[in-house]
Image (cartoon, rainbow, N blue to C red):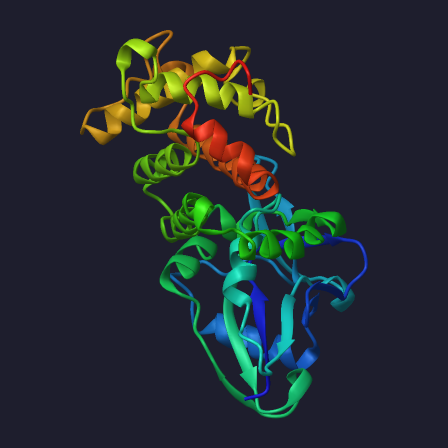
Length: 326
């Protein structure tokens, strides 16, 4: 085998001109006709149930009575089909698709690949050598609502341009910052969980704790995990590359209050309790589990990007008891 491509399973619109080299020798581009035929064949054999994959080549309509989105059955013009691939040649260098996949999760919107196809010839030419199949979590996620009927998310060329810097920043992490690598690996593993949002919430907090907290030494010094989360996440939200307004998720509350309630919610789950979304000034402020999960995920993406940009700052924050001088 001499070349291959990874299919972008996320339903995307690209804002800009392709192809673009996202890492040395790796090109994000439109799928060619031969590749589309292979992709459609693999997808047709991989449905989770009766629902189709996202509308990569089909128009969507809104049902007036319900407001729901449904498939129209009408094909888009071929130049508007949304089959994207990351194409590469095999050579003496190691395959970097795993590293690219980790970087794709940190973009806005985050992107997932579904499977890989390899060829006997360079530049995805000649006979297909073989392919992987979409793993169960991908098939389940993208062939059930809401993913299979969602409109495409739009990603900019500037966002795709971050991939190279993310991969290189991860490569440059030394042993001192192994905790950042650990957090990235755990975050990458969360994509294996589709529907169990409670489990995902506990995992999300384990990532946050790994990045910004240390083991409490003296509760009188106010270095409890709860205090660390409230004070440090309040500081970090002001330093993120991309702003994540709390008001967009939970209303007009101060960050320390929200993070305190979020950590209490996490503790209830971790100890086998049941969150109370009805009690005022408690979990009710958090609205529901989906809102919590999305908010935590977006914060973790920005936190990891900040850690890659300035690992020394994050290491100092992790070990700090007092954030006032950071």
